[in-house]
Amino acid sequence: MENKKMMKKTTDEQSMLLGCKLYISESRNLAALDSIERAAALHQETVIMEKFEDRVYNRVRYTLVSYVIHDSSTDSPIYSPLQQTVLAMVEAAFQAINLEHHSGAHPTLGVVDDICFHPLGREKLEEAAWLAKLVARDVSNQLQVPVFLYEAAHPTGKTLDTIRRDLGYFRPNYMGSQWAGWALPEVLNENPDEGPTQVPRARGIVIIGASPWVRTFNVPIMSTDVSMTRRISRKVSARGGGLPTVQAIGLVHGEDSTEIACYLLEPNRVGADRVQNQIGLLAAEEGLDVETGYFTDYSPEMILEKYKKLVSTNQ
Image (tube, rainbow, N blue to C red; front, side):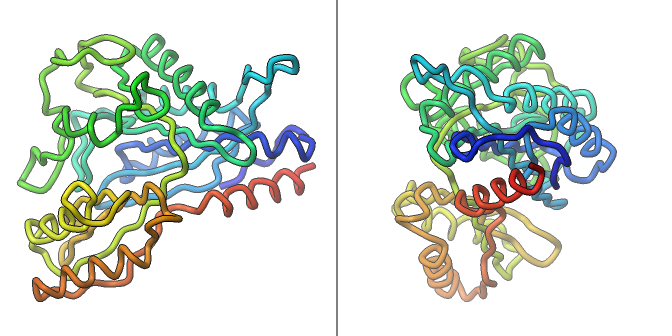
């Protein structure tokens, strides 16, 4: 998806960019997605570079890009259109989606499950963290939901998977393999980094962070036995003694297959080929076949190239 109008930027300004991956727990309600995208379209200096939907997971990810303006004397970031764009999309999501009516095969803790900011071009991780914290304050104050921060946006660098594990993110609460509604206490045991401790059941919580670019790579397993797929995913994950910098979870994905969804935290260190090979070996030990995995996102180089072409065309 591409916005038709963008402000003219110099080549140098085009390299001062931030990306944002915005995950929303909905992909079946097309009217809801349309309202979220219309909210984004009102902010034409931010571009939706990519949209990935999965109806089984009932989840959509928008990848957004925009520029950052720095103070000329201090070189500190002072403005990015992404701030208002993301807030508008989150507000539209809350208006169109009720978490209590949600069910899907992918874990979630909220209507807006995760927002992560990433440096692109010549931007630094510190700038992504700056924007993540601004958006966290906006979301918590204006929309009254608890917000947890992670990675570079958190004072101690707390990881996303640690927060999710503490909150019970990885435990299905419906039919043994699905996630539905808000399943935790309405008053959180742990204080969020921003916002109230009282959780609105229709909205859930939001987790917001900043990190280097993470690739998402999924490998289909030709089996309906999700417990076996989860066992393989634990063995391939760094936490289970598998591949370093890889996080993996086994999920139901359709009527006749399951899937191992992977985060490649350092894709230049441990890439998709190595993950595919390791999953294939582990699956073979269980007597299972695997299909060729697929990326659900673009690399940062592809995003940057596509964005600059759009800017050049619209100028």
